Amino acid sequence: MPSIIKLIVGLGNPGPKYSDTRHNAGFWFVDELIDNQHNSFSADKKFMGDCARLLIEGADVRVLKPETFMNNSGRAVKAITDYYGIEPTEILVAHDEIDLDVGIVRIKKGGGHGGHNGLRDIIEQTGDKEFLRLRIGVGHPGHKDDVINYVLERPGKDDDKKIKGSIDRAIEIMPLLFKGELNKAMTLLNAPNNNSDQASEQ
Image (cartoon, rainbow, N blue to C red; front, side):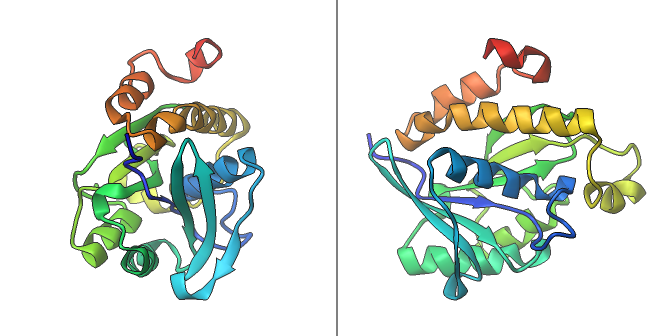
């Protein structure tokens, strides 16, 4: 079965000021994914970001880290999808998710932006919301007025460890996505007991 994924986009903000913040969890995911494959990113101006290519499990997958800042992520996504003829349903977007507890990671197909400005711009630029999302839980500050400051802060040591652990578990199921086995990947990753406390059992 051919891969259902032709593009993986990690969302975040460029530069050292933001590199360790919660809002950059999508960047953390793709960085770890590429590192695990002993690959590397290179800047590509026409796609307004850093790009890499994975040839794995019979799949040819592009990986993108937009350098446009979060609110304009859709510009970079549209540029690369138009160039390679990639459909929205062939995209996986990895992003931080405040509506999931720290250490939880989930795959979701389609839906709205949920207030996430990176997702909002991708939907606006591509005109489609049916792309896959890898939702990396970073927790919620408790009040909506605190969200912006919260996601632009670094997580504490324990939370950082849990987020990185959830990213590791997501990477473990990526071969299933590359082979087109979405339902199996979602079942494994979205299992109720698949959280940071059970990480060693996955």
